[in-house]
Image 1 (spheres, rainbow, N blue to C red):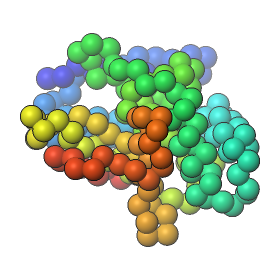
Image 2: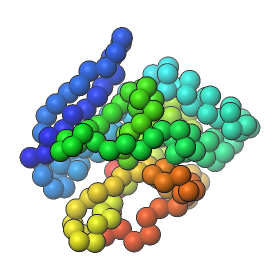
Image 3: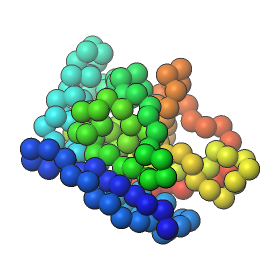
Length: 182
């Protein structure tokens, strides 16, 4: 079993839920389901919507420019939310409002934030999480997750892990891939 801590939002603050995840794919699927819940809850929070609107305004994106808005949100997370790892030995999931509050999170926290930002301003895109394996020494193990948007039949990867990575670029040869619809 893997220990998990999930920071949920509540009126007036945050609460932490602790538990355990089953090993392997069952644990990954449960983690992705928890992330999906955080996206749905977060997309309805006023602070998340305000952050999304501020990001697209600051980027100078014209109304109804879905790709421009998506890119502005992507750059906001990539450049403005510090990549910081989980608590040692604990899969830590943060709600989007908490990630905004900290200004930091790991790949799953940033994926949740991106999904929530996009949903909070009603972007007409289908979203999913993509979990991948990047460690060739452990090809069956998932080690990374990011958000993928589908717009007009085209998939657009939103992996803000590295500052030099443009929207649309993703890990070239993952050892394993699992998509999970939002």
